[in-house]
Length: 433
Image 1: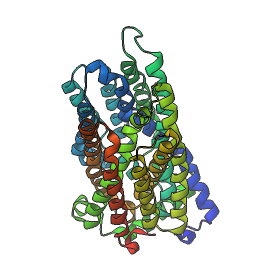
Image 2: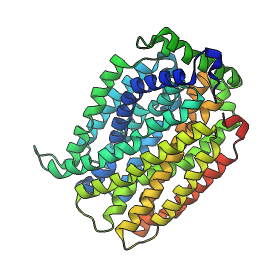
Image 3: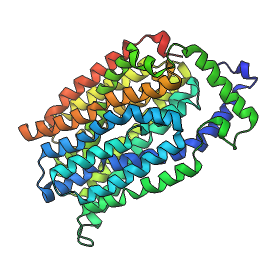
Image 4: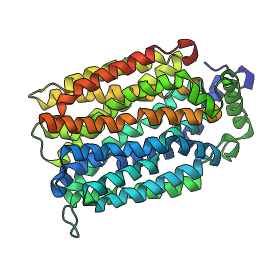
């Protein structure tokens, strides 16, 4: 835990400063992340109509949904290095406006090739956003606050599913054939608007560093800068881009995140389809049902990461939810006759995956700082997100081969176990604080 004595501030004063910073920064970043994920995963709902309209197979959909991550991976590290150099305000605004424009173009897809190209370009446009946000928050919050701050930011992911599911279902049902366009086309156009608007808001209101914040007093800036400087003294080994690329811990975390991200994206992209297989055909009701697991996920993320901050322990708080994810995925792979039982299994998988993902991102700042943190966040996220392509494409291929996407979930359950075991192999003295 951070020692406040070197700043002359009491624990209550420190808490007040970081709560103030959180209230000024997190709502905007959370809204941006909600908008990002609406644009990224609304293809899961568009699939309910566009596959028939465009005669796409499950394999075409799986490859198209996943090829997003190839563009994302290729441009993630360069994007985050530019963010480190230019500042989060300008670069995050650029990311959002670019992906908003490309997301809108998805409404006019007619062929599989066009689908692949635009999904790839969407990945290129969004590359750097999430690791950039993590790096940005690491420049504001010390270790004993970082877990819950990251959990609050990442609560935007299940929140985007809670909001996006019913919204997407409503758009599909209400805008079908309006102005000669199908519901899935309106889905892409309407859900692009928040990204474009928020990109302009970020450009106007985001503040790169505490020293630039005119809403902080000099004393408050001193508390934050002193805490971060003291923490930085313990991380002198990994401060350059080269050190991030040569660190065995970074590569171990990248492999672990591949396993974690696999379970996250399987749940996101295929949950609507798994619900539909139980005979639920109303797209609005499917959207409402997908919100349920993510309501539980938000609570799980915050409780797990608040406990991690208070105890100064990272490994078990990341691994245990990973094991629960594996159980949830394995149960989701069983052919229950009851939709309620399947929803319970999906809820366990979604809550576990969300909690372990949020806890995971408190680990890299424990030993990375400066340019190494920017590059390390991006490298871990980009290599881990190869899972986005592999998992979605694999589920689509297995669904076409066997007639049921549930048949692939045991494989992803095993990957979740592997990810948890890799986390437990990290050295506690380096990771915990």
